[in-house]
Length: 424
Ligand SMILES: Cc1cc2nc3c(=O)[nH]c(=O)nc-3n(C[C@H](O)[C@H](O)[C@H](O)COP(=O)(O)OP(=O)(O)OC[C@H]3O[C@@H](n4cnc5c(N)ncnc54)[C@H](O)[C@@H]3O)c2cc1C
Image (cartoon, rainbow, N blue to C red):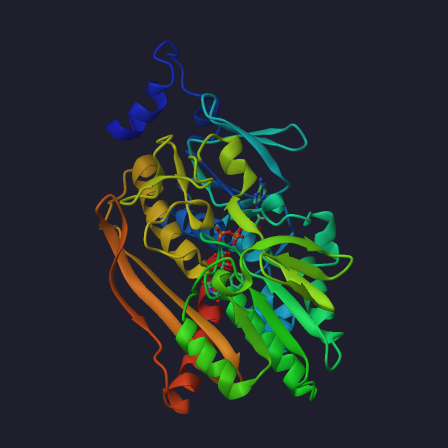
């Protein structure tokens, strides 16, 4: 007991003043426990930083429902033929062998916040002193009338990477000249604001590369505008004239329903027909976040912007797409940045390490065509009760080819860097 700081002692006594003996896990191994739910951009980074920077003083368990993780970032480049599926798929082996992290493959179904345990689908429980929740998003299937999880096998969303991404690529690869792909874009807030428009670019790249310039991609958007719109549309005009058509609600009159079998989207003003559909529904925090009582009416999780600590429970941190991150977009870069702030605060709670002021960063690159990449990004800090943007940048129209090529090279370097930062 003499080794515990006053802060740590407070942690363990707070739960039960009557319990005069140490909690079982302390007696057993004398180490505080962190459990991380979700082994993606946020969770893998948090697990790695907590394990690495505490140098074995904290037991870290990482729960993810898959053996391997396929990144959504660069999944559009896989669709476009710029990356292999293997190159965007990563293993958790190094996190286990080099950082001593225990990887549990399975689905977390509940969190008992009073007992501080995570319940798994097989009924087992995993105790924690601090919990990091980074489950990403879930899709709100009925936000698009006529769509369902079952129909996503034919009309993929591919907004979670893996099998869905392969179905999407196969559908795009099967398009013939004169046919149309219909994309239903998601409403705000959703993961990766420029993602649908980079995806349309990559689809057009595939079609153009095969000489199918009479094929089209129609984007039906519930939003009146989208991220990097001017530069995207300039790029589409330059590389894919007449091949990508974007319609906002003032043109289509509102997306009313879809019929996947018939290949149609019914809108307020028209019926659109396509040979293949990519339907990206509205989104909410991954189900475990609401099961744990960490969400508010928005479907996402409020956090303290100085630490990423849940405002609902001080033993829990929520990072990545599941949290309400103020001005930060839902991106892998953001999740990775938030994870480091959470990891620092988790270590401070458990082993008394120093806390520095929170700082965050994000850049989202989007590839329009070979060597033509655009970007948007910003620095962020806590301010006005949220994570607030402090300075930002965005690609401009009419930029030099060399600058766009440099952007692409930068994005390739970023991908290598972030995946090493996540998986070791
Ligand atoms: C097409 C596309 C392109 C993108 N491009 C970029 C880009 O270029 N740059 C960028 O920065 N971001 C990009 N993103 C966004 C990025 O992928 C996400 O913002 C990021 O992955 C969020 O990280 P996360 O940790 O919140 O969630 P994820 O990375 O999705 O990780 C969550 C993990 O938790 C698992 N999980 C969830 N619930 C449970 C549970 N109950 N039990 C066990 N496991 C669970 C999930 O299966 C998943 O493995 C893109 C997204 C898409 C869809």
